[in-house]
Length: 151
Image 1 (cartoon, rainbow, N blue to C red):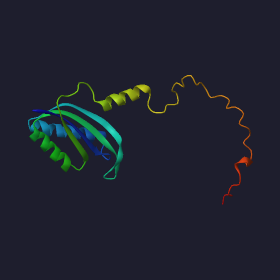
Image 2: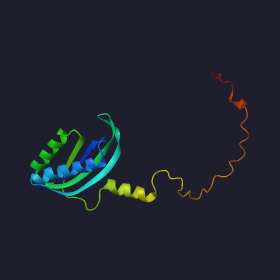
Image 3: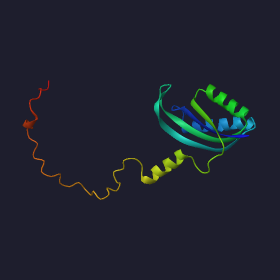
Image 4: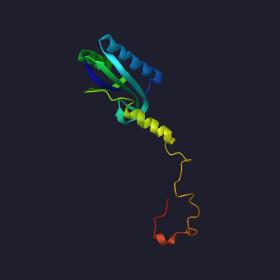
């Protein structure tokens, strides 16, 4: 049997438990046709680079399988017929990488850092901004030249 990696994107309208149910459903399709799922990962609801079928987000799932090609073709056929699945990508690999995928590693390292744009993060050697210097009162700004009046 050959080794495969599959990624599929499900519609944003379904819940995360329904998306994980899709992973279980397609894993069962593979096992019914003589294959096995080595590992599965649910990557969560993620924003896509462009709209697909009027959806800006999608539930991403990742499967590592050891299956015959007939089982993979049947699973892909059923995925493409399923209303909730928007995109499918299957790649044949020589060997599976050990450990979690790069997406899960990046997500966990972001969680360790404290997320995006936290206000409590370390400001390094800058310290507090303090006084911004002599900026004047910024009065009428007559030095800007003639400007068109607002309506």
